[in-house]
Image (cartoon, rainbow, N blue to C red):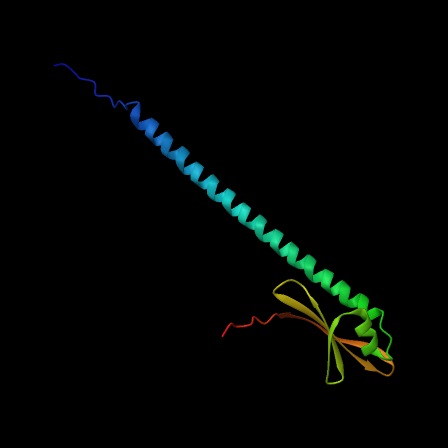
Length: 130
């Protein structure tokens, strides 16, 4: 009786196809990771720009506020050419943060002193064409 040896021979095509599949999957994962990192980077830049614009508007409003004297405030505000509203015995200074938002500094005069009531960010109203 002759004994036949049975061996499993893997052809050269199967390992190559498997290796191509692994490389393709790794390439796809690397591309997705790169796109995600780029998205986070862009988001961080947008947030940084918004924060910068907010602090610039806040600095401008505080500079104007610190230069005010309690007497004849309206005349001082008109000379500084800043947008303001006087309502309920409170002054509201308004500065634009960007095209979508305004920053409002509200203060009032009490006992010959100026007192800040609030800082408030508000979205600008979009005028409807109707």
